[in-house]
Image (tube, rainbow, N blue to C red; front, side):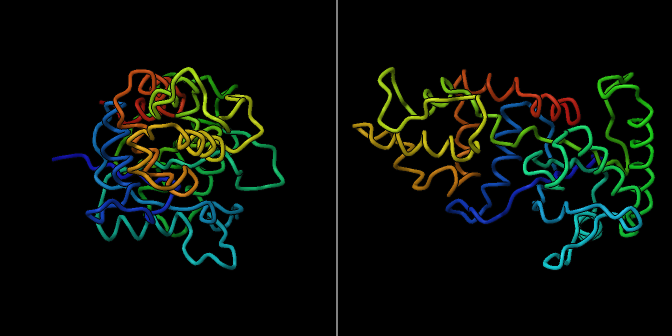
Length: 267
C-alpha cells in the first residue's frame, strides 16, 4: 500500500494555468519535485501566515479575530476529507509568527511542534508524533545535535522552516540571468545587490523580471508570463524550477530548504 504524504505549504491557490490547475500545485508536485528528485506528494494544501498566529499553550494555535480555521484545524479537516498518512509542513521564517520576537528558525520550529502537541483539534496520532518529535528536539544540547534525520511515519507532521523565505531558492544572479535570457549587458533597472538582504526576495526578483522586459527582442518567457514575481509568484517559481537550466537547478538544489525537503521526502 502506498504511503501517502501531503504537503502543507504557505501560499495560495489563486494562480492557475490555462487548464485551471493551480500553479502552486504545479510548482510543488511537478516542477520542484522534479528538480529535486522528490517522491511525489499525494496532495499540496496551502495555508497562510494567519494560520500560524500566536501560540496558546492550552489550545494549540490561537485564532485571530479574522481567522476561523487555524493550521491544526485545517490539517484535521483535510485528513478527514481525503486521508493521508503523514504531512510535511513548509512555512517561511519571514515574517515571523510573533512580530515582537527575535527571528530564529529553531524557535519557530519548536513553536510549531508545541502547537501541534497541544492542539485539541488534531487526531491523537498526530499529537502523539508531534509530542515525540518535540521531546527529541528539546533534549538536544544544540540545534545541530542529532543522531539521524527524522523519518516520516504514520501520523508524522514534519516542519520545514524556509529560511528566510521560499524565494531564497532562486536568489542567485547568474542563475536568474540565464533563465531570463539576460546577457552580459545588464538592462536598465537590473538589481545591483544580490544576497545582501534588505529587500524582500519577491521584490528583488520582480525588479529583475521587469528590467529584463526592456531587452530587444523580448525573451519568450516574458511574453508568456505577464506579471512580475509579486503578481505571479507561483507561476514564476514553477518556471524557474522547471527551466532545466543547469545553474538554476544547482542553485535550487544547494539551498538548505531543498536539502531539508530531500532529507524528509527523499527520491
